[in-house]
Length: 134
Image: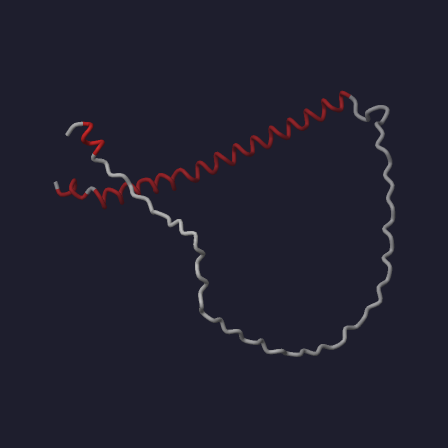
């Protein structure tokens, strides 16, 4: 088949044709039945009228304008000492964290190794049955 023959053999999709009628559609002639709702009278007890009192106004709180102190209360030496203490605390916490991580690792290694050997053995038992027969 040539290229021209294959392109001319393609089918075109037919689309739906719409009617262009100008006459309006007739309304349906089915009758609808209307049912009357039953009227029910309900009596309720009279509502007690409560006396409304005026709310007391909230106390007004005045804030002082923030002012910067003339001289800082801490000296440079105080800042240096504070930084040294904070660094010592950081170092201690880091050492403790590392020791906890080592403990978790040492406890989890045997469990993970036994899980790996179990999975390998189960896989071999389920799928590698031919190697045992030989």
